[in-house]
Length: 250
Image 1 (cartoon, helix red, strand yellow):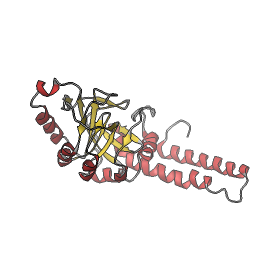
Image 2 (cartoon, rainbow, N blue to C red; image 1 turned 60 degrees about the horizontal axis):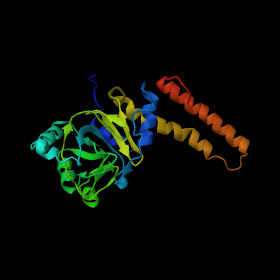
Image 3 (cartoon, rainbow, N blue to C red; image 1 turned 180 degrees about the horizontal axis):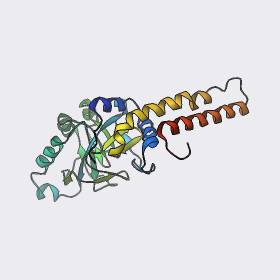
Image 4 (spheres, rainbow, N blue to C red; image 1 turned 90 degrees about the vertical axis):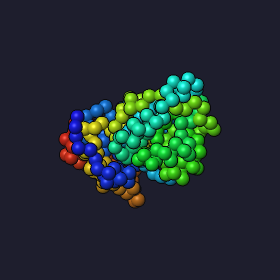
């Protein structure tokens, strides 16, 4: 598939909404299973003050508990960094830790986050660990990870530019990702172009229908309030179907 991808400006606009709002927009337009494409396991956002991040996946697998890896390919770091540098940005580094759910060592720290930031990466999603939290924050490199860790052990790139699985979700290189403190969403390429418009629409739709109805309870009986919410729910669903011509219940 060779579709025009969102511009850098559109990615910045996607960051104005949280990941659940982006999911709502994606749900309205996609033909994919809406129970897939996001993390099935709990994640932790270590820099929630940075807000959401959006970018294209670069992928790498590590196994910090295996001392053979650093010796098996002495050029691994250089080759991996050339791969990262060759991909279009903004980029999110998706790291599958083959030791997981155990945590033996951290791939991320002050040095690695600064290097990746210089290579056009805005953050990482890793089912392993990070360290140097304050220094990573100072670098402006957002991290969604399993936990913190003291040492790096035998952290080295093992495979890169490959399909990975993190937090129960499969990610392929180049896929668009939106992530924040709630988790992350991986967008199919055919849904990218309409995603921003759909997220805006669904946010407006909620604010124009269901939310005002739910907050209009002053002076109303429970029956009157429920009637207003039911009517707003019908209007919400009708607007969505008219906009995106999708079947199903809303």
